[in-house]
Length: 200
Image 1 (spheres, rainbow, N blue to C red):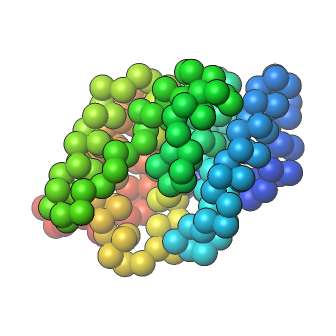
Image 2 (cartoon, rainbow, N blue to C red):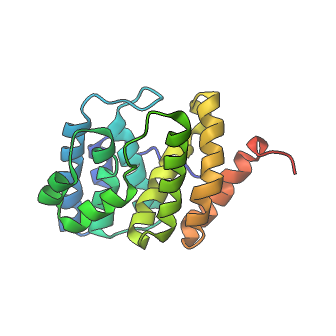
């Protein structure tokens, strides 16, 4: 199973993008990275590393793995958590990065969670189900995000690991069916983590 951790900073990412993408696309991604770095600030992943590393991993997945080249999709990948996890609004994303990027970010942004645990879980399931009807570009954003989140699942706490594994099987693998590269990657990942699946 290939992992994508070679672009931990913009310096490595830019080197990886140059030659693969037109200069104007690299510049759009650069602007998105600067915006995301400012908005996410000191936010950290559950593993303790800067949050920007997750965004750049997702970018690496899309470009170096799946061969995605669309400027708006790649920009949205960098910005996919900026509305969900910071005070940034969709309107700000549209103003800075365009209406289509803002639309894609909006489609992959989970709605505010209810306080009640059961309602929160139901809202999460409804959000994941809604992605099945989302346009292909939004699905690519979600798939790249999820590869980054599960490629090193062993580094996550056990309870998170089990929940995320179950959620990935139930809601994300079906999204990957229409995308050959992602389908193959998740098939390999599933074999690595097959021991978490209930016995038949």
